[in-house]
Image: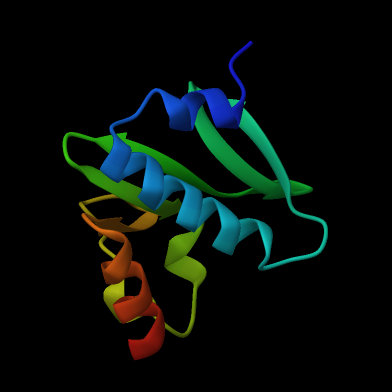
Amino acid sequence: MLDVDEYICKQSPVNAEILYTLRELVLNSAPFIKESIKYKTPFYSIKKDLCYLLVSKEKVHLAFINGCLLGSGKEVLETKKRKYIRSISFLTVPEINKILLST
């Protein structure tokens, strides 16, 4: 079974750096958050799935399962015609810091 480290290592160096940065942010955001692979992608949960990381083409997405319910920071999330899931895309690690500082 694929683990998160293996998933990240299979990505391009730029995407791997973004994934490691986002992974660290997610894991440090709550004390009991759990990491697993579902549908061949990293998922993060506390009792229920909260978010996941996804690589598509040259972008890395941080997607929130019930992102429609989020309060602050909602304006930076993309809907992409999805009912519940909201996501944010990154091309570089500096973009992560820029967005975190602006919300």
